[in-house]
Image 1 (tube, rainbow, N blue to C red):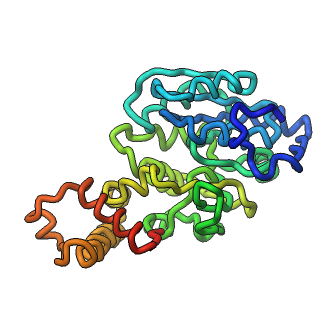
Image 2 (image 1 turned 90 degrees about the horizontal axis):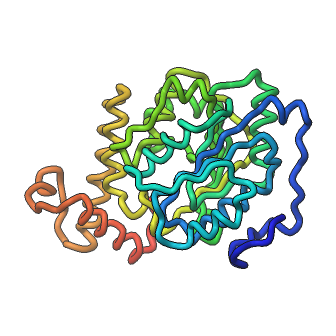
Length: 314
């Protein structure tokens, strides 16, 4: 294992782990392309990269799309240049744009993206590639995953099944969502259902995965594959209101009008709770407009209430 640039980037399970070596035939027949979209991700990026190194990386293409970071991101990328195939650092239109441009350069038959603050678990990439070969090259594969705090303390363990990966089930995405770093798909699935909407900065993964489950059967890998790290700077935590509103639009786009109304009801319920705790008067659909509170202001109130009340929102 390569020496870290920063000592605090060593993962807890590194010392006693030796990656499983895949069969040569499996390696040759499972080209995997990974896109890492980042911007000023230096606080966590080295851990993300090191997590990849705990799998067999032969015939794995790693593409980094950096939105012209101004922190220590470039130092980290330089330190790991021997395992990264392509690094492009330039301004982009956000995460969706970076992912799209990354996959434009991908030459694998299995696609995957990994955000610069998430983790794949030891041998996860090998597990996926072996599963892909053993199951007649499925178009969409989903493994189990954890949502964790930044120190990897678990918040929730997501265990899926084939039934929970059906299109009709995932339409209620606010309740039945996937954990993005445990989702792998084929180049064909991307060509059919991609690219991501670059104007969607919050629910683009839901949009893609709901579309893919309509076009293809998703297979379940009954193994833990990833940690999705849920910290204070996460868009879906810091911009909770925008995330919920965008998800409702995505659900409606895919014909889930009933599910979209349920998602919007969550938004109103959350803000009524916030109002009761902070502004002492309920906020309804009508007086959200009357109060002229922006989504960002409402989101800040919601996040403040979560912190003050130690209330976790799943």
